[in-house]
Length: 553
Image 1 (cartoon, rainbow, N blue to C red):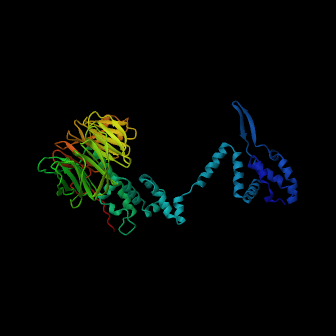
Image 2: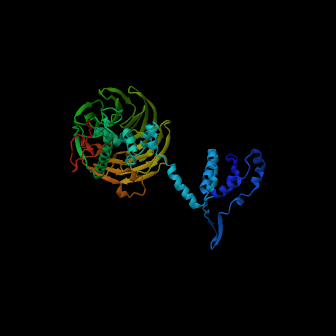
């Protein structure tokens, strides 16, 4: 009796088609099944030409473009089903590795259209609905985690795949997680969550107070609509304007300011520092002590640091207004200062830059004095890598933050430089040549020159989208930063909007995604609100323009 297990695979793998393999099996069925006989005849089998065991399956036809191989269809025979079952039975006896090797050899002998047919047959077999399969294995959290990486458009599409996908998205609160991810990474989303009062529904574990997934699904397009409205307000200049009259006692002018959600702190020409309530616009506190105009300031949650034309730097306790420290070093007016992470940098009309170590508000020591500018140093900025300074000598100088050594000079402005901001590789500067320049700090190249102001550019700030500048012409201009960094963008498209409300020189400004706050020689502080604006451009008051409240049923 013929033994299935005794068939050598070498014979199978030598066949050019399934038909030849079946012919080989028929021949082998006449061989005795004893192990000894198999051993004695194995050499003969290996020497027998396989092509002699079955009829030729291909015919070579001479064509005009060369020989063409035509495959001849195997004649139908009554015992085909038996042969096929016998072949499958043999196949089932082999290991998985042997089966794969055998199939690879068979496929290698097939023609192109057969490969296409097999590919079409295999495709659906290889597809797996893993999102549906994972929960069935008790792995819902993995399915949720995979889908949580989708953006809004993809998440909408995923909900339409089937009920099981929709269930995973709903029970996993994936719309809530998407909004939380945007709030964590985008300041505009974070600001909207606070102002429109839906932040209270985020970053909390599942409780009865948390809305269902459907609430977040409907909330998402409303947030997108709000963002588009804010962007349109910036482009079109639609805003709600609020004005603070500073009522300086002697000389008028607000030289510097900084703000947060609760307060605005301003430094005035009349030597005082005034703290304003940002909601009511009332003056909360007046700090006195400087004997000259307050030219620059910065504050954090603990202290206010101010520089004055009296040549001193003072440190104040932010809540009580008590003077904690007075630094006497510069010989002339302190024009600008910055502090962060235990380091402070001040600059002066005396042409020097002082680098200070701030161990505490009362423990501040001078580390190094940087000398190199040939005129008053008007502004400084720094990060962990570089200190950047700009001067009336028309240059920007770059210094190493760690070693305080000089690195390079940026040349290009035609007159003195009054302001700059530095972040990452980008430096943006404003000058009395009425222009704004964008620089790559690493190579010193000027990337773009912005023209439009009619007088000295006194203050400048930028974020990821915009540059906002203020000048002695009383104008505030909003520029498209991304377009300015694109050398192909026409110069005429770079200025998005010009805002004119100040009646005097613009000394200082700050802005975020929703507003600009500026100060001027006209003794006012203006709040340009691009969020709370009605359709006709009129104010909607101080309350949020839209709130999203979930009412449990």
